[in-house]
Image 1 (cartoon, rainbow, N blue to C red):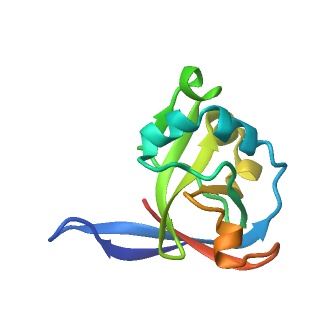
Image 2: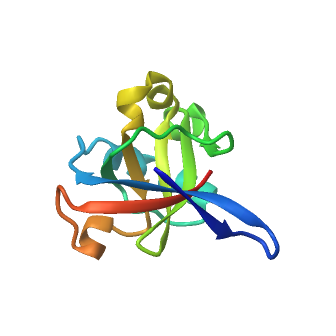
Length: 137
């Protein structure tokens, strides 16, 4: 992970983390949950999200920031954290369950990135491709 300076509101600088990793294949389980709770995800993010994610195996572990968007277990089947991020110029969200965050190191090496499109299809990505995600820290 490297840090970069980004601009937030005029006159303010935000610390940004550049997360690097490789496209990986997931279990495909998130698709079902995204369809079941699509209205809740849309209410939280303002986007009608594609039912699935882009899995990225990170070079270094990454933990959630102190502030995240949260969907309760009642709203999404399990406590979910969403972190706004940028992927290839597109506004996206990092998805992580509370259980995965508490699990630690191995789970911190995996990013699940949500968007309004299939990121694999939209950007022609294949397993093993090197990618970067920009996130505020």
